[in-house]
Amino acid sequence: MTFIYNSTPNNLTAQVQVYKDSKSMLSTPAKNIEAAPEDPRRIPFKAKINLAGLQTGRYILEVRVQDRSANKTASQQSAFYIQ
Image (cartoon, rainbow, N blue to C red; front, side):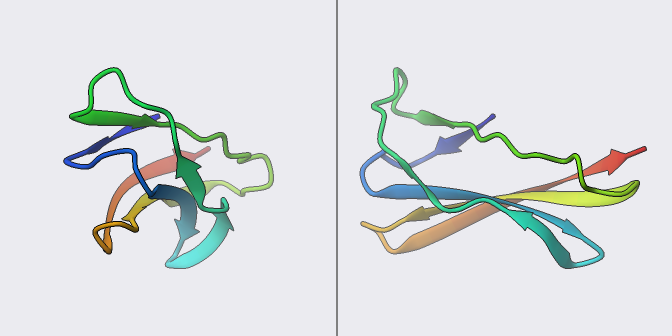
C-alpha cells in the first residue's frame, strides 16, 4: 500500500512494476483509482503482486501514477530482497 499526494482521484491510474538488474520481471495492468478518499491530500493505492516465481536477489519495486487530467506522471521506487 502507498499513498498518492498532491492530486485528486479524478482520472488517475496506477501501475506496479518489479525490476531486477534493470529488467522488468513483472508488471500489473494500469488500474483506475476511483474511490473518493477520506483525506483528499493523500489518496490510498494498494495492489497485490505475486512474487512466487522470482529467484533470490535484489529487486526494485516501482509504483507509477498517471494523472490523465493534468497530463503528469510520477513514480517512486524502493529496493527489496528475496532470500
